[in-house]
Amino acid sequence: MKYILPFIVLWLSPTSQSQTLKGTVLDSLSKKPLSYANFVIKGKNIGAYSDELGNYSISIIKVSRKDTLVVSLIGYHPQKISLADFIGSKNLNYNFELSPKTEQLEEVFILNKAKTYYNHSIKLTTGNRNQVFPATIPFGYETATLIENPKQKKGKLIELHIKFKDSSRELYETHQTYYRLAFYTINDLGFPGQLLYYESIIIKPEIDKKNYKFDLEDKAIPFTEKGIFVSLETVKPDNVKLKSSMYLTTPSLLHTHTKKALKYTRFGSNDWSLKSRKSVFKKRLFAVPFLKLNIVYEKD
Image 1 (spheres, rainbow, N blue to C red):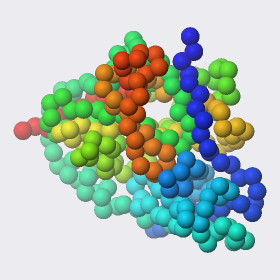
Image 2 (spheres, helix red, strand yellow; image 1 turned 120 degrees about the vertical axis):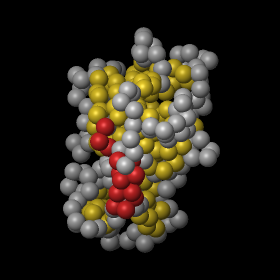
Image 3 (spheres, one colour; image 1 turned 90 degrees about the vertical axis):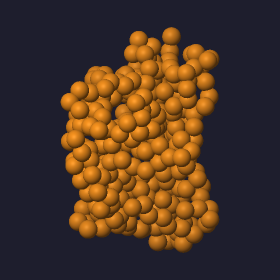
């Protein structure tokens, strides 16, 4: 039985020099290029990423003068520009300099380093490892999974396990994807809130490697009283060229089933939405990424 589900996404590639905005994105302090910065037309599923050298290009064929381009990267303040001045213009070059969130990073790290924790860890998982199935996610989408805190006590995340499955042999055309890992608080509405770790973590999975374990002991990532969101965003590598809007990304992220809707998604930096639709395989359950976490709680 095939479990991979095809998705349709409007991920635009440059088709004409005169309709493509391009430039570079740099760190405002160091002037170093920023790889895999996220470019998205606000409110639309149109986006791009900067390459390893900080260069970007994004088609503005299907945008209007009212549209806004948002550039974001974990650990940096986002920037917005109006596209009104670029539509119909001959000047289609624009460079960005993003300011790092250095103060927030230092504050989070120092606060968590000053705390003491129990030696024994608690293992949490989103579902049953014997009931997992792969699901492809199109480029540019971020999937945040809610991990609730059973003890409602403060702690920190020390280890994360993620499982992937090679889908390159499927019937649809496949493209290798990278994943960006992020961690968020839970806001008052139950949606992903503020970032808990201000460093961009890019995962470049190998096709034949299924299990990934991340040691986060020294990252000082808080595990709040409510819990946290663990997020994975599909990032298009530089060498991937899309020929069609119908494609699969590989390796696919393994999913499992839960009784509650725990998955939230968004395109680029747009607003989050709760995936409340039931699984196509089990009508009474929800499909969410299969994640395993090890956490330690603070000492009283």
